Amino acid sequence: MKIFLIGMPGSGKTTTGKLLAEKLKLPFVDLDVEIEKSEGQPINKIFETKKEDYFRQVESLTLKKFCSSAESFVMSTGGGAPCFHDNLAEMNGTGKTIFLDIPSREIAGRLAKTNLNERPLFAKLSLEQLKDKIEFLRSQRIGFYKMAKYIFAGNDIDVESIISKITD
Image (tube, rainbow, N blue to C red):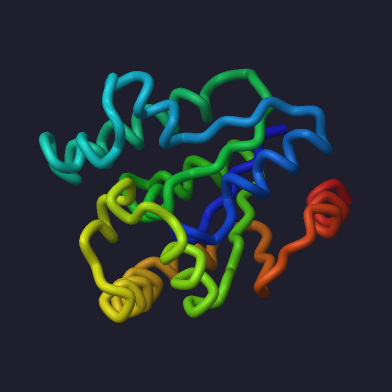
């Protein structure tokens, strides 16, 4: 079984993914970490030196490599991964996609507590700019996210409810 968690940055894909993987006894994969390993540098440096188009190509190739493997896993994707290079169709075709639909206000609060410089799309933004950027990105991406096979909405998404729904 392949499970892909999608949603905005700060929606809890990594945290939820690790818990889900543990409960289902599957390996956990963080797509961004895999890209950093293969490229030998952090995501923000890739954006800075090679730009977003290059990153999106590497992201898509890395995702497709996992999709074509025979392995089962739970994967946390980057927030933009479903929106480029038919990645969402690839994920839907090979596994179960789960959209973690967290309100923008909650996402802004979560991201404000992190090091935004590690997040290339949010680096150097004020709190007000951060909220605006989240709203803008959400409006651009929501059409992709809503094509997930499963949608869980709210501030606190329970891993047990995800498990019960996807294993029916």
